[in-house]
Amino acid sequence: MLLQLENLPAQGSEYDVVVIGAGGAGLAAALFAGLAGQKVLLVEHSEYVGGTTALSGGTTWIPGTLHSARVNPQDTLAEAARYLDNAIGERADPALRQSFLQAGPAVVAALEAATEVKFRPYPKHPDYISDLAGSTVNGRALEPLPFDGRLLGELFAVLRPPIPEFTVLGGMMVDRTDINHLLKLKSSLPSFKHSLKLLLRHASDRLSYPRGTRLVMGNALVGRLLYSLSQLGNVQLALRCQASDIRHDEGGVQGLTLRQGKASRSIKVNQGVILASGGFNRDPEQRARLLPGISADWCPGAPGHTGQAQQLARGLGAKLAEGSLSPAFWAPVSLRRRADGSQAVFPHFMLDRAKPGMITVNARGARFVNESTSYHLFGLAMQEANRSTPSIPAFLICDAAALRQYGIGMVRPGGKNLEPFLADGYLTAGNTLAELAGKLGMDPATLEDSVARNNRYAASGVDTDFHRGETAYQQNMGDPSRGQPNPNIGPLAEAPYYAVRLYPGDIGAATGLQTDTQARVLGRDGQPIAGLYAVGNDMHSIMGGVYTAPGITIGPALVFASIAATHASQRNTRAQTRDTVTQ
Image (cartoon, rainbow, N blue to C red):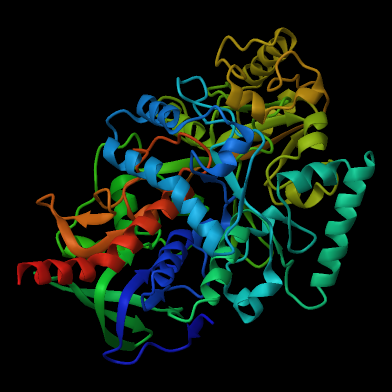
């Protein structure tokens, strides 16, 4: 059983592998090292495990798996490589993405054979730049199977809860399949049965748990990783604990100093330290340098990404890599103060902005972006447009029909119970477009013209301004059931009209420590720092700051977690073998 340590390990404790950070990458690294027979310590400075993975959709992009063959048997690793080459070019080392592609299928197979981590393919989930050669519409994106959190026992309490606004009925998690059934609850017998099963399960959960125990998306992936760790006897977990020093000599990493409150302990490390702390997004110094003008209040990521592990690595001569399209990955987010005083940061991934009856405008009331592009490109477009015309915040605009159908941000579909959102200013309403523009401080004529142009595009199906809805990815984000010529474009015609403010939120780090194909951290001389590894967002993104597909942070995180853990587990063995041969 995985041991959750309430206190620091004893002074002088000895471990084979220490993993810093218990998000998805760190959990996976600890799991692979544990499966390799190593004595492992997993260190997490917050009170929860799961990191941003637990808050995410959990989509995992790994081409070439057996799951991929079920829905897209024509796809090949060569085609995936061609797509990545076309999308990324020289923004990241091609050898790293080749290592990822070659190892990925075996990593998924190993997880599913030896652990409770299980996946299924999306029937349709296109690569994000779907007009590039080598892209595909399905097979590469996997999702974790739902998981019964009750199996975790006491460990359920340390699993980071999802973003509350992504749940319903006080903590019931739902994925896109569940949402579709819930929306059709009254019109479809299969949807009614599916929804009733969900509701009865949740009602039962709430008798004994503070939230639902049917875990989906990122919470399911983290739950499965954590449960798999709990079945091993050689992995320990230390919460509310952080590394404050890495001891290193010519032979490699030798040990760590760990702190918990005012207490500190020195421990010995035999084979390797794997950094998986989530990257720099909560590091004020790095934010000021890499993300100037972007408030940390707009970041929807978990609070543990302080960059401290990267700072320790830089103290040993490591460096952050360069050359990315962007130092972070992005999504438009909206903000609202919760009843307890905390701030909700809601990422607008797929449920509203790409749908018909929705447009996005700048402070003048003019469109400036393809609303159906990927959330990453949307966030970059906001920042670029803001250089010439105020576009932060931007305004997501819809009419009453679209709000009823899709909701908008934290406002649920149905169009009911709008008063709290209107009262606190999260949602702005106008009986006419001119009235809405006045409340938002923009030119009424400009907003009216933007809506009129959109409505003409809805009729023709062609957006001559921003080419909305022209790719397979964009069309998959739309709604063909509306019967419009273009599934992404619909008229805004039914009053009242509504608006929500959008900000560019950094959802993860793309800039990280430079590594080699074994996930070894490289020094300023380009040579590996022996015994030091980086995975997840502590590792420089193999995508070079290009958001190529759904799950391109989690997929590489799992694969390089396996690569790092395997290399670290074999490091002493190789050294001993070399010494024996020399003798």
